[in-house]
Length: 129
Image 1 (cartoon, rainbow, N blue to C red):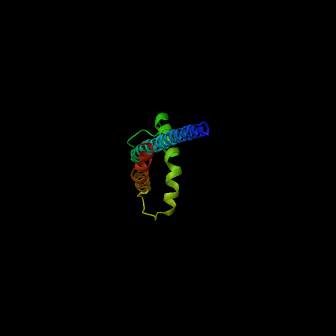
Image 2 (tube, rainbow, N blue to C red; image 1 turned 30 degrees about the horizontal axis):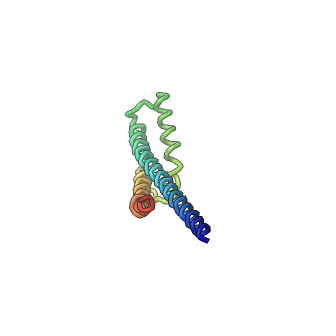
Image 3 (cartoon, rainbow, N blue to C red; image 1 turned 90 degrees about the horizontal axis):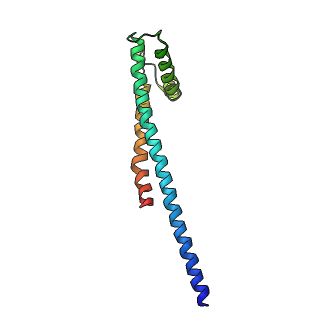
């Protein structure tokens, strides 16, 4: 009878230990995913700003629009930002020549980062600790 009790305790302790390790590993993976999302949003933030500056330089002929590198850079910025800006532009009123959709997108990114960093990150860190 003692052997069975000791064996049951040993199995229970191993199960609890493995469960705790899995929870810690999963919390670490989730924390890494949130970190990567935050870094990607930071990079996209700079791409949006660079795209807006590039569009101004292009519109006022400050840069040579016939240069192949400039055209490739413009296509990169357009392809990187237009899928996110197009839905925002559909809902904005016509403001003439002023496009505030990049500002709205930057505010959305700040909102997403605030949600990731404030309510979610402390919860994930509490799981790891």
